[in-house]
Image 1 (tube, helix red, strand yellow):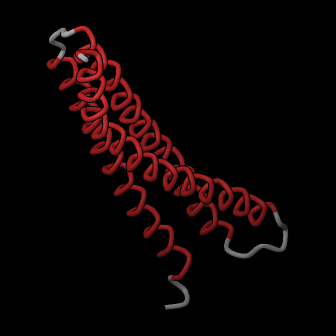
Image 2: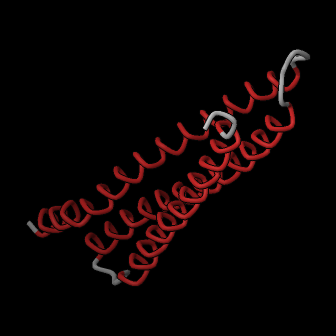
Length: 146
């Protein structure tokens, strides 16, 4: 009976990290899609620059520099959010040890949780920088038309 209560307590305590992992996984999916789009756009931009009939190569080179910078920023955002997922995942074995073996690992669990939240915050900062650079690249592209 004691093991059943311990197992129920474990399942109840792991709901929060699992929900956190699920939500952060959706953010990771969005970031990887943004990175893929940036890489695809960079390849297209290189093809345009290499085309001898292409106009305004200097503007396209500036846009390409922004795209490359965005790719590295998105990479940093993906690393941060992946670190958050790792830390959230590590909370689960800590909770298991606490519930099954009755050891006090609350501090370790809190450290993993705080690191996880820090990864989310850092990823959001990188995402904000990426969006700002996206708008800057858009200005280069449409400035002649507005």
